[in-house]
Length: 555
Ligand SMILES: [Ca+2]
Image (cartoon, rainbow, N blue to C red):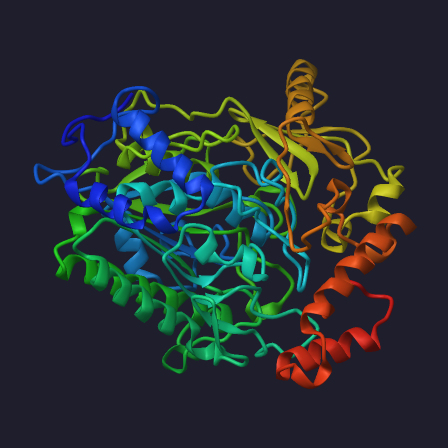
């Protein structure tokens, strides 16, 4: 079902003019997008280009993306000790999703959001570890790439985490503007504060003040909205918080009953309110779809720096529901009915097709994507159902589970597959629950995955197992590339990234031939840096660390 109420079947003049103005600087794939859009305009391909309102204005899109925020870490989702009045109000004025799925770790969820695909399909199934020599391929079409031909102004603010090299930077993935960090806000070999902060491609400081992140990124986001108010815009605000190490702003330190983690979430809540108020004050409220969600479940085991996925089982790094089911709220006054709840199975991959549906943009033509438009569900129609017959839970390249309707099947993960546990990414090896036999759960009756009912429903186990084979063929499984998988972006001009590296980048545990390749990558990186006395402070730290750890290539 497609909503046509306020749509007009042609692009606004501003969008066309901007596309022409910028065409000279685009590279090939963007040019192809324009051609695709033109084809759509003349009814040759794609859906109806859509613009909102009688004035022919395209909708704006704001995506607020938090890091490691759990299913139960908002008041509206049941948190007993984190106060989030502004986000709760956002839900009361819009729609709350109860079964919204992401990946169990950071980078893959970001890839899925921006490309509308399973992360393994676009070569980004695993987390982008510090200094990993790969990123989201610049050949992939992101939401920002997709919207540019329509004249959208696009910004990525906050945490990128899809490749730290220049060739993978947000400005090369369709974003006009970037202010933020390219890597994770900690857990690399250096001090937590040594995370370079960029303004577009310019590194503006080696050691940003992490306590300022949430409010600074919010301020930048508001300024972007103000600058862009006279044209359609996409704002992707990816907060680095509440990922550890957690640094709430000084105004929020100690305010929450849920410790540091709660402080960080309450600060994000306040900042989300600022953005919503800003949209209202600029008259953009009814022209802007705002989406709030998180990239994965809570990272458990860090005391007052951990959130909660109650009543779901497990947390980040696992394919239990707590790792991959997160809060998601969408608000768009007069378009999404207020105070509604959607309990259909939906995913982060669906955001890109939804935005395409609402803007009239052409989805990428270069390969399959997996997401589906959620617009029918967003209208709260009783007939609208999940667009997914089945959803696959990947951890890295490893297909661990699948869900169809109310049934979730965990595939067998026997201890005898020792080779896998020895070679896969450390986070995956440590956090994967061993299962000698498949386990079946009914998520409607047992959302906490406490009662394995595989023995009672063998026919369902057989049916879902057959669906798993379809995913293995198309998307692959551990050590087994699927036919529909596209290449990872490589930092090296001459080396591609072998599929075996993905989901298993435990670099030192791989074959000698692969180690040779990795040495080539490493050598290349330091050829770029060339001389120690030309390195800046961070690069000197990096250089010294590598010299002190000759056996560690990338970790
Ligand atoms: Ca995360």
